[in-house]
Each structure stands twice: as structure tokens, then as C-alpha cells.
Image 1 (cartoon, rainbow, N blue to C red):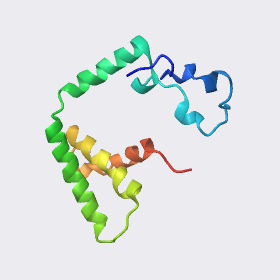
Image 2 (image 1 turned 120 degrees about the horizontal axis):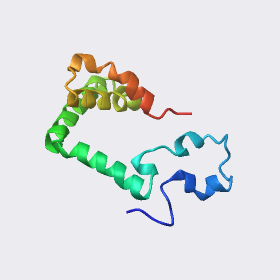
Image 3 (image 1 turned 60 degrees about the vertical axis):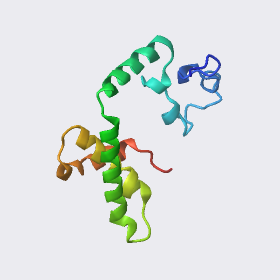
Image 4 (image 1 turned 90 degrees about the vertical axis):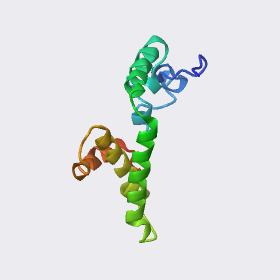
Length: 126
């Protein structure tokens, strides 16, 4: 549910408008406005949300869940014997690459190239 008291559009956030969040703040990269569903309000939000909803309407959620489970188990089996893992590098960056590659019809053998874009979009510790 959207709130009139707490806008999603960061350009309307009090801390940004009054300068409380400094331009050189380390939070700026994640609070800067972008044309994303989560960071828009009103008609722009409705327009973007409709596009996402229409795009996801054809996805078979049960089949997708099976793919996610299969790839998750495969990744976990790959590091479970070691008794430790870097969950970001060994799991969180790889799982989306496998799943998206599958959804796009890219063979598993080629999906490892997606790790680079997956790493690009996942947050990095500072």
C-alpha cells in the first residue's frame, strides 16, 4: 500500500530536500531516484507496475519454483561438504544467473557467464 505521508519517490524525501542527507553520503547511491517501480508514485508507479505485472503474468510460478529449488540444491551441494561457504559469492550471485538464464532459454553451461552481471547488480560490502 502506498502512503501519502511517506513517498516512494526519493526526490520528495524530507532528508534529501532539506539537505540532511548530504550529497556525498554513502547512502546516496541507494537512495538516488531511479525510474523503478519501488521509487515512483502516482501514475508513473501505476504505469511501471502494469508493465511488470503484464511481463510476469506468463510465468508459471510452480515451474519457476522447481527451477529455483533445483539450482539452489545444486549450489548448496557444491559447498556443503566443505562445512563453510561465502553465501554471496557461492550462492546469492550464482542462483539468479542460473534461473534467469533458464528463463531465457540459455543452456546451463553458458549460464556461468551471468555471474558477472549478477555480481554487478548485487550489493557489495563496504
